[in-house]
Image (cartoon, rainbow, N blue to C red):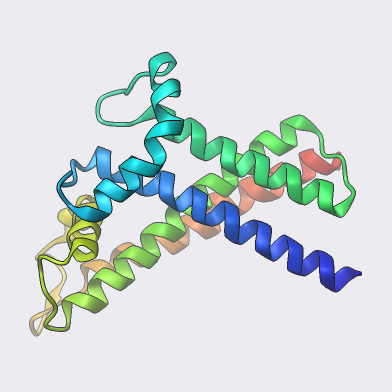
Length: 191
């Protein structure tokens, strides 16, 4: 029975992770003013707008940050954690569940950036079509993080800015989100 629960937990995490990725790409594409004519941007907009449009009426944007997308992302992780606790037969404390879902959201954003920066830097080493929709959207998403270090960490025509940013992101996962997740778990389990 334990193996079935692990498999079910894995499938739940995959489903919620895919949903969260969709809303996170929407959030980052809007914040970084991605080209709306990009087919990938249109796909993300088409499938997130039915959920975000009603929420945006109540919760408008702040500067270029889509607060409705942030709220929906947080709710996705809150529901995921609640479902996983229910699957395990545990009833968590609400405050712990809220903190734990916030830690999950921060960790997901950091991990998303690590993966996108790694993929973008790997693709930039090869001769790929610079107008490919995925590469264009990834470029728009990673540029704000890489811009401060661009050209400052170049050795023998290799730019180490992506590596430096990924190291900082991994450190943020270890030093910020992991303690927050531990704190949330202690609150959730009442310890």
